[in-house]
Image 1 (cartoon, rainbow, N blue to C red):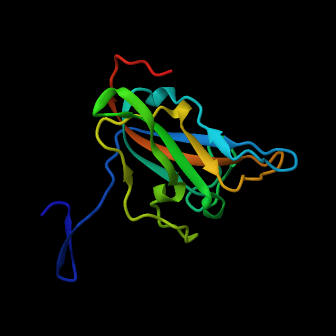
Image 2: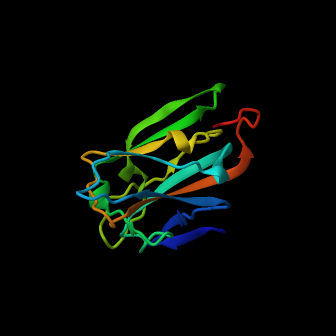
Image 3: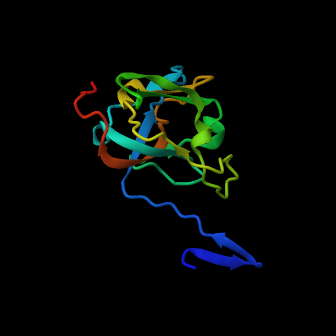
Length: 175
């Protein structure tokens, strides 16, 4: 039987992630003199993902990876404990409708890697319904309380998006 193994007399399927296209989003939380008091950080436009079907999204913490691609320290699970994600997405049932249909999702719900740092993790990946695309420039992460990092202490939040090269409502241009 292909894709199965025998463990103590139990036939078990091996779980693997099949990825064709991924895109890592790095949201940099800039340090500020006296501590950053801004609690909300909008994402920049993600042109590579614009109008394409999003399949799933996952979060990386400092326990998973070293520095970010830009060389910043990656946020720890402790720093992300009070962090929430709001995604502005399309409504696949109504092509003319968009909105904040995913609001204030605890960002650690997107962390599904069990690592040596014992970070909290979910046993399942966060998968989008078919036909969903995120309008990133209208989406944001929110820290409560404010992050408080100081000048020169930039911290990055890393989100990895699996996507399909399938246009979602290509006739409608997103800003």
